[in-house]
Length: 241
Image (tube, rainbow, N blue to C red; front, side, top):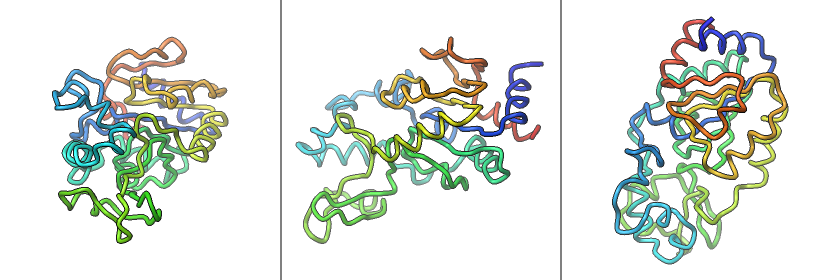
């Protein structure tokens, strides 16, 4: 039995399966990740991307923040790929309990997934820092200046920037899903982003599976590691489930 066949066998026997995904889930839709050699963090800007995407930079230099944000983090025009679609189908068929994602692009929801736990928020939600009125992403991506609320306050994307903490309710949901599933499939993540990567320590189930193009610090903890394209693996899952 090869590795993908083993994974499919795990899925068939699992009572509760959870998928934990990172940027690699969306790269096959054409979006750039952050840490690979072709990722955003290796591009040259006036300021390092890690600094631009920090809370203090947003406060001190919102104009430069939004210039980068519109240029590099706009998911509009990108479509869900085979991985997004198969995960949505698995949920619909009662095979998948939830998706825990580090991505902010909303592609899982566009594919039809309902139970998506967004650890780092979503570009689709934006709010006024003064009156907390919510806006969709048009207020950000279809304007050229710093987006302002009707009350005059600056609008901030509902995404977790560096120096900001994760939402407590979101953490609780993610930990509950991970600690109560018997199969956790991790896909498309380097597992170098904390605290998100640390949630894996709450897994107490039967099988921990990792699908990624390169090695991660957690490989030795897994029952099954597949170094391959997520699209290829999920195409096989669709063909056999």
